[in-house]
Structures are given as C-alpha cells and as structure tokens.
Amino acid sequence: MALTARTHYNKGAMQLPVKITYRGLKKSLGIEQMVLEKATRLDKFCDHISRCDVAIEQPNHAHKKGNQYRVRIDVTVPPGHELVAEEKQIDNGTHDPLAKVVHDAFKIMERELRRVVDKQRRNVKTHADSRSPK
Image (cartoon, rainbow, N blue to C red):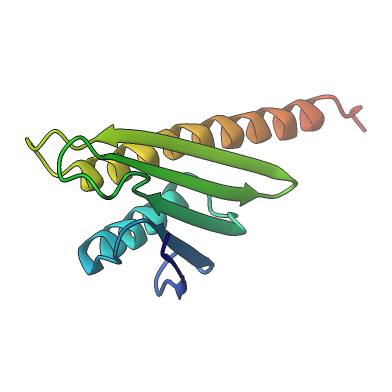
C-alpha cells in the first residue's frame, strides 16, 4: 500500500500546515488543490485551528468500479478539541466520487467547527455574565 505524505503551508488566511496523506491511490494535483481550498475555507468558521490532517484512501484500489474512497479530516482547536470528520463514497461510475467524498467530508468538518465555536462563545458569554457588578 503506497503512502505519500505532504505538508503544505497555505498562503492566505489559514496560517497552519495542512498535511495530506494518500493511501492506496496516486497523488492528484486536482484533489490536492481542492483539499487546500477547502482547508483554507475552514478558517472562515474557526480562526484558531492549530492542526489540519487529511487522509485520502482507496482501500480496494485493484477494482475499476465499485471502489470505495474514504476521506478523514483531523482538526485540532485549542483548548484541546480534537475534531474528526470521515466520509466514504463508492465509485459507481456516474460522477467523480473522490471529489464528492472530499467535499462531503469538509462539509461535515464545517458543521463540527461551528458547533465547537458556538459552544466556546456561549461559555465566554456565560462567564462574562456571571461576574459580580462593581
């Protein structure tokens, strides 16, 4: 099983390395660019991400059709939140399953980031409101 890992430092809003790992399939510049664009977009939902690892897998790469693609995104948000989004897609020959699974996995991560950020904002607001007046 082939393994290629690369760390990218995005120029632009997100100032953290995005580590992309391929397992069971060859690196694709198109998919790599899509991953980097989607990772940069995560910064819109949470501006204090400290890590973003993306694993792209094709477990049964010997088949032409019916292959399953899997994308797993691991993101760390201080103080100690480890978020994981995982999506699978079967290649049925009707569309680009790899692009779809990447897109869907990042949509899941966006929802997770919104949930964590909303929770953090509520906690800060609750603490501020609970202080005694001077």
